[in-house]
Image 1 (tube, helix red, strand yellow):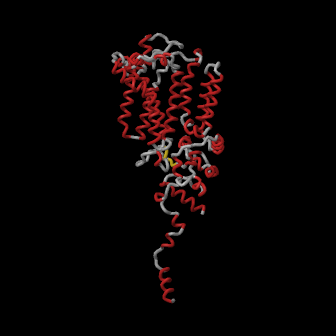
Image 2 (cartoon, rainbow, N blue to C red; image 1 turned 30 degrees about the horizontal axis):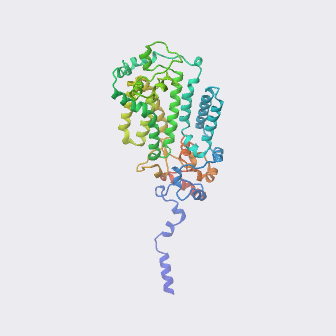
Image 3 (spheres, rainbow, N blue to C red; image 1 turned 90 degrees about the vertical axis):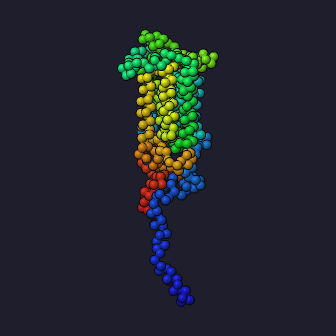
Length: 438
């Protein structure tokens, strides 16, 4: 018995330090790079509500049809100056619906109800809210035909040709469109008549699957706002395109004159159908040559794709050059129009990339592999609570509803103060705050 006591006493006196190393105070000092990403740091209840894999909330989607969920989100939201964007979009939407032919009150009412339904039902809001600017642009563009002629500015006929001579010494559009051939017509038609309308959807699908969560929503917002600005410039600074110079010379232009499909008329003749003649003849903005949204859209798509997938840089550059050539060959834009569209596209992208665009993480192929996101050139680490504008009170209650990339997308317009970190490399700061609370 005495020998046993001696053995026990000897073991407890061994200088291994295992008790100190396993104490809770020591375990809390493990470097953050060895810890799992702390997506929710407010309570253990929140972790249980978010399911066995809380990081899945970054890439999952909303499936709720309850409008009350939207009202609850609005009630707990942390509003910021950037939310003025929604007031502006609402203003453009109301203006566009108001100027449409007054004899269509039923259509206006149905359109307003449809807009509100898409915005307030969670399962549709997650798609419609980030792309709201795109739908506003389309409504704004097609309804602009109803703006009274007497309040519009004069149409500028000589400005763009003069700028062409000053900047380049020659009109590239007139030179490139001087000689035509059916093969060249088809080659120009592919990007201008098909790619311009279909490529935004293709890019969206690619970014949704393979880019970091939140990239697609920022692309949609940027695309829509850039287009709204482009149409506004075309309305306040109306200029005649190259086809007008070819048909009417430098004669003054008047509102009410028909547009022209220009080179696309040869495509209709080639296929024996009316794909472009009627639509371009009755275009809402026939004198919207500057800036070229064909060039702006292609350049913006190329910038986003090369940011997410650098290996596609050569392909994107080829497509931009291709569509720029097509716009001039088909006699729809001057080279200065392409320059204006490119400047606008790059300006929007540069701002979004610096402040709100999620950063691609090496080794991540699909959006579902992301456990956290860093946004902007400054690599700000955002928790989902912070991105959605929730404080510590609302976060626990709504943790299960944070599984919506298209709601999180809206978060990237906010830069509120940090309430935690979703990055493994920054969880040490949270550890220190936990020790102070203990």
